[in-house]
Image 1 (cartoon, rainbow, N blue to C red):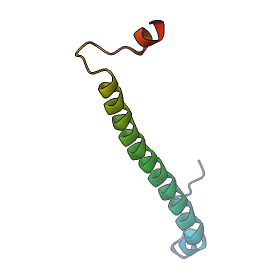
Image 2 (cartoon, rainbow, N blue to C red; image 1 turned 45 degrees about the vertical axis):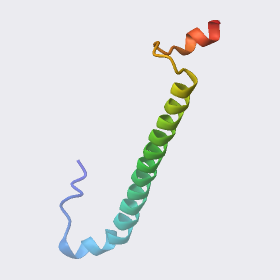
Image 3 (cartoon, rainbow, N blue to C red; image 1 turned 180 degrees about the horizontal axis):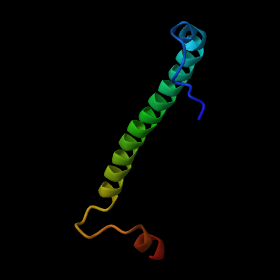
Length: 69
């Protein structure tokens, strides 16, 4: 075990800049993933609405049935 959590109070400022950069990169990564998920949700909803418009009757929609016809 590296015991990184047991450091002297005066040594905290040595790692402050690297920790801040690491956390900003991590935050940016999570924000990017969140944005992609939100965009993908809207695209899926739009695609679902387009497919429901194409298949207007109340039958169960199956993409395989369209390919086989």
